Image (cartoon, rainbow, N blue to C red; front, side, top):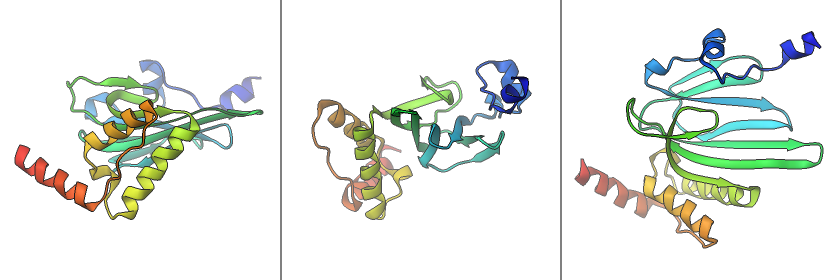
Length: 180
């Protein structure tokens, strides 16, 4: 039993264990996302995002870090012998140190949740929306945060959401330039 337990990935829920495995420090100002991959059981991955640092913890676990302001998509999927138990996707904006944030599993310290949906049919719709954005020539990391909120609220209401293409993106860039 002891050998089996030692081969399992260690989860860092306490500060002591985070230091023990060399997790990135919160003092770095980065948002850390713990990604675990156990084939056909527990799969967590980044669908898009500009990773600032990547640390391999063990053969199943790594930690991806994002700079403040970076937007990324975090997908979680879990199953057992009978099929899928849980699937979710969150579009998260990494926050500046000292800024308010929402907590989210496996994201430390947390971030601004722009979109969060659960259940494979809705997750699949968001993944298709991301694919469509990429097909239009826009990097999903640069999409207007309001568009991710729009998709989340429309899915929650069971309504269709607007497409995001080059025209909408250019309008967002102009608005952003005026605001800054």
